Each structure stands twice: as C-alpha cells, then as structure tokens.
Image 1 (cartoon, rainbow, N blue to C red):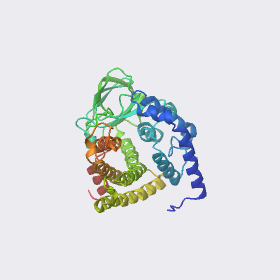
Image 2: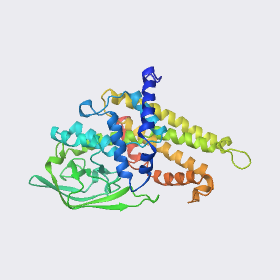
Image 3: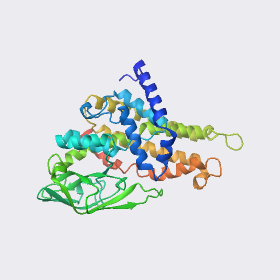
Image 4: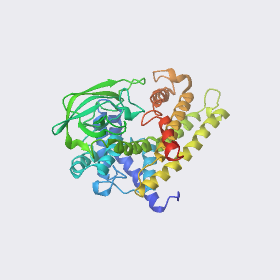
Length: 389
C-alpha cells in the first residue's frame, strides 16, 4: 500500500480545506453548539456536504455515492477533524443505508436512499434492549403478523438521538422456535406511528443523547421489512461491521492528541511545562504509537472496502483499539487539566478546556461498550481470525 500523497491527492486535500473553510462557517458552528438549533444545523451541514457530492463515500454511484479512493477518504476525515467540523450522523448514511442498498428491494431503495442522502429523514438505531445488550440475539421485542402489517411490542434502550428521529431501524423477534439468532427480522419503523413513546435518559455527563423507546401495539406495514422475514441477523451483522469501523475515530483521536500536546506545552507557574515531564512524555508517546498503528490498519480496511469487499473481523480490531485509544486520550486530557477539572466556571485559565475534558471523559467510558462491547469483539476475532470455537 502506497502511503505517499500524489499531486492529485494534494490537490484534493486543498479542495477539501477550501470547502470546509467556506461551508463550516461561524453561523453554523454557533447553531450546532446550541441545543435549540442543533438538529436543524446538523441537517443543514449534511445538506451542504451532499450538495458538494461528498455525503456518501462508499455508497454505490447509482444511489448517489462518491467513489473516493481509500486515500481520499483518509484525507477528508483528517481535514474535517482538524477543522473541527462535525461528522455526519452515522445512523442513516453509514448504518441503515448500506443495509437498504444491499438487501432492500427496489421500492425501498427508491423510497429511502434519496431522503437519507439529503438528511430529509433523521434515523436512530433500535438494537439494544434492557435485557439484550452485548447478547443482542436475546432480544425480546416481538413483531406479530396481522394481515399486511406487523404489530410490534417491546422496548429498545440506549437509542441515540431518538428524541429527534423520524425513523428507527429495529431488530424484532418474529419466530422463537429455533436458535436465538434465527427468527429475527429487520424492520423500518416510522417514529410518528401511534404507540411509540420516547423516554429520555440523561447521562452522567448531564447530556441528553440517549433514550428508551417503547413500542405498544405499533402497527408497521410489511412493506417496511428488509429482506426476508427471520433473516434479520444476517443484515444486522453487516450493519454492525460498518458501525464498528466508524467507531475507530482515528482522525478525531489525532486531533485530540495534538490538542493535548499543545496544552501540555504551555508553561505553568515557575516556567515549567507539563510536556517536559518524562512520565507525561512516555504516556503521550505510547498513545501516539498505538494511534499510528491503528491508522495504518484503518487504511488497509479502507483500501479493502474501496475494492468492493465488506468490512470483516478487521472492523472488530478497529473498534477495540480505537475506543481504547480514545479512552486513554480522555484520561490523559483530564490529567492535563489537573485541579481545574473539578471547576465548573470559566474564571481561570484552562477551565474551558477542563470542562471539555471532564465531560468527554465521562461520556467516553461507554465507548468500549456501545457498538458491541470490546469483550464481544475479542470473541469475534478469536472465531474468525484465530479459528477458535
């Protein structure tokens, strides 16, 4: 794999920088930071990127995707992260859309894909349940056939941004006679359907991103079934591979590492910078080495995907190492903030950074759990890479 940027790659990098400078303006930044305008601003951001033709790298061109090379995808993600621009929400573009264009019928593709691409519909994911998290195949939410519809009853939990969502893609139990991986179906459900209730879950970081979604006799047309009934586990595994690849977050971690290095380089009282401390240098260098190795692994996965292959067990490797590195960086950032990490105001120098360090640290404790816990990912690697039972 050639990792040297060509003249064409450098021209693309300059094009990305120019686009981000223009499209990610101060007004959009302010609206994204305000809870009252966050949703509309996030939609606007995706539409700006989509107007450029860059919203869906990896999608087939026939559905509006852009055929970036692995290097171009790498360049875009690094430049986006360096500029502080948000990623687009993955639930539509990176999670349910690949399932629809791979396993859905023509009517479903025509109905949903253009609206996902232009952010006309906000999606959320209905996988985990109160009694089925890492052991996802133990889910209890049921869908019973009633004429041309399914009647859905049950609950999903840890559903990110369900309070904003127009649609939810769900795994539901349609048959209990075989092994638990069988008898699961993949349904697309309109969140405005009667019988759906969204209960907020406020995290330890005092943010409302998570929810519980209840289904009480929710009527869903059979036309919203993806693929075959009882075969949803196959589609779910494909979706999870895409999700875990995205969770690696290499570009974001590179930005965080650079920010930590900059903050640690500031002189403290007495003219000494934390970056001169040998233990800090070791901790930072250890993370940087791990991040470089992860970056090359991600490039190999991107190159594989560009050739038309689906993410395999490599996605589990990316998920494990990516989230471990994120947590290591969050802890180091909290260490750099020092005693300011316990202060809620911005009266002293460093407090704004400390607020971010504290909140991100608390939220980041979940990174090794969501998307399939890292323990589960190790089992996947043991099975598919090492051949263990």
